[in-house]
Amino acid sequence: MKAKIHLIFALATFIAAAMVFPPLRALLSSAARSEYYSHILLIPLVSLYLLFLKRKRIFQEPGSPFSAAWGLVILGIAGYGGGWLAGDRLGLNDQVALQVAATLVAWAGVFLLLYGRAAFAEARFAILFLVFMIPIPERLMEGIIYLLQVGSTEVTYYLFTLAGIPFYRDGFTFQMAGTAIEVAKQCSGIRSSLALFITAVLAGYLFLNRGWTRTVLALVVFPITIFKNGVRIMTLTLLAIHVDQRFLIDSFLHRSGGFIFYVPALILLGLAIWLLRKAEKKSNVSEKFI
Image (cartoon, rainbow, N blue to C red; front, side):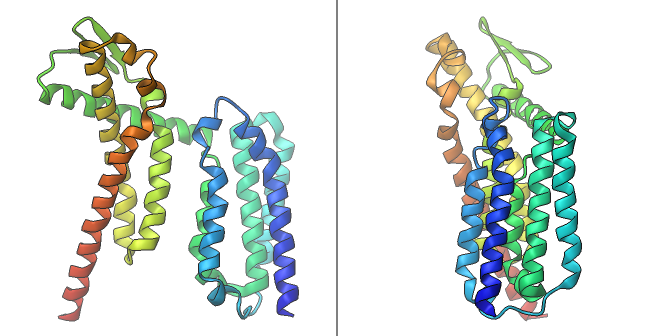
């Protein structure tokens, strides 16, 4: 019986993968959006590894089927069909988002039907982590990029001020020493921000034990990201002024140097984890004396 359940789940997983592959391939082939979602292909591998780590507690003895999960299966199938029927009316990004989200809902419903609520509770993080496979809806993405653009501009302003660099600012544009720079949408660091946020969520699950510390870790990604962006913008600007203008136009550091500044961001994230672990220990000690 257990082998049959595992076989059905494996088949459902294969079907779900076959459902999301065509729309995701179309999205990742789009030059306008592929750069934002290079992480998507890694997400199911991480979830699979997390399920593997807890496989004995999740799959060893299937519990009572959660029959209400049929609603999730039906909802997921309907949502996928709706996304397919909507076609270009939603736009490629939002259509793929709907189809991937619907597929994951249906797949989670199958999991609940086969293994029950106790197994789902054990596998909850690994299953919910698959949410990062869903492309961010267009309007929400634009809002996030705008917030990062604004935050990065403000950090750049204060860094220039602290460094004593004379400049004139007009919105997102800075002018100084014969050089003009604009903190454009491309400077928002959305790709590295997504990667850092996903890393923070995963690290919180692996290294922290409290809900509030995990939430704080996810939230500190925003200030870390905009600080990293500000440092990158100021570095490129100073190199353009004092070395070569091409650092701001056509240089490796401008086009592909984001990973160089991503390393300090990871270090800051690691520092945040260390501080939050200390806070958890203090909280545990305090609770013992209450």
